[in-house]
Image (cartoon, rainbow, N blue to C red; front, side, top):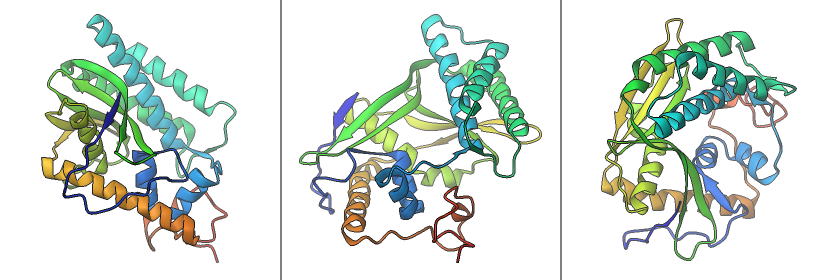
Length: 274
């Protein structure tokens, strides 16, 4: 669904009318904030990088849960645990087959098994209480006088008017991280722009510990926080415009975890490179 955000009088940043890309996304905005050089390689140069094992795990988990809640939305009953894990395994295999994958410190088997375990716990403890009203719904935000857009997907919207997101993660998310995350702000702003404000946001986390954990972490955003999103996005768009014009593409901040795990091993800005 497409929605236009009306510019409020308190917007302080003038947006660039055009960008070198047709649209931005939550993923691209987060990547720009982490490492402008990696953003350039991915979105300007279209330089592919090996898929990360954890990214494959996240996508396979999303695919399985998307199927589960889609079936529940249509019939009132979702997939059984066995069928859910079959969906997960099938999607995983399709992504791994014939692809170059960067497994990091994990092995493929260990990562897949840990993801399946966490997914099963979510299915048993969290999923039964959720009544979906929309699953993996796309949205598009635009602003007057701006040619580019912000696009994305909402994993799940439920009967309590909550926006939900599924996360397969290695460590438990804390409240501070949930309250600071850009994702709830963007998705709740999209719902408000569509004329259907959400009651709140829930991270449905599946933690891949030795003993898997399924947790729901709630967070919210005020109208003031949603209003300020436009300035934040326009500021990042201005940064893209400036970097394209100046040719200055800095790397990730020194000593950040993000740089040490980057899969662009030839990057001269990567930690450890001369």
